[in-house]
Length: 143
View (tube, one colour):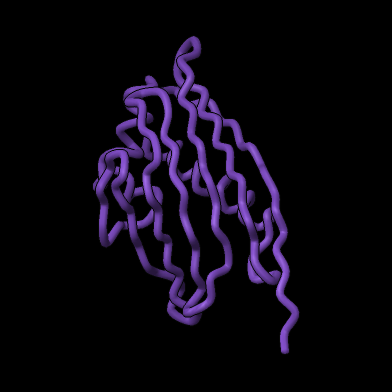
């Protein structure tokens, strides 16, 4: 029998974009724009109580499933969602994510905070933080 364990962690990533908070917010709220820097969602209900669901992955790797539920949305200011991430049939993590959009001179400071439970060593907070940095860099490229 495999030993099961959970690693809890919180990380914060901050980036400043040369775009207004409203424009950065729209990059999260518009499914066509979000698909340019994240993944194209199979289900995209950007509203409190709504769901975002997508599957994908490298051809040689397992199918990754992202399943999020929006908990709070303050247009142009804050997005809060919970999500699970599965690799094939294995749940690898469950997280609470908060995105804060703060107007600064010349643009927007985005503060991305993730509080996660990472299961059985299938994923780690360090790998997730690295992936988040890459994701937010991709967002910068489309803004």
